[in-house]
Length: 150
Image (cartoon, rainbow, N blue to C red; front, side):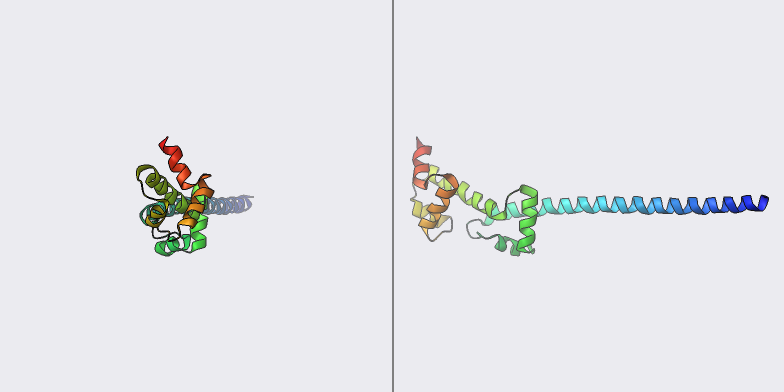
């Protein structure tokens, strides 16, 4: 019986060794997945931050998401995916918001005409700008100016 016990011990150690190896592989895989997920989240946040900075600097001359994607060396689809995931809004929304913030500032603090403001914001067609403003704000640029000055 002594020989048989040695065989069981040997099998036990082999099984234990295999289980330890499997546990180590599983733990390693889990840690890599977790690390990869964090890296992807960090990449998403970094791209979103980079996009917002670029929009603040370039919203007058660059109005398309694809233009920003090109500057960032990523595809327009990936930019949309990243920004939507990080903020819940599309890149176009953020570009438009930057334009509207500046439009409101100019309407409130200057006496420039709507046509002049549209031109300053990079729109050659002031009627298009007025429609965009009205659709987003629910009032025309001139109504906004009148209400904000009262």
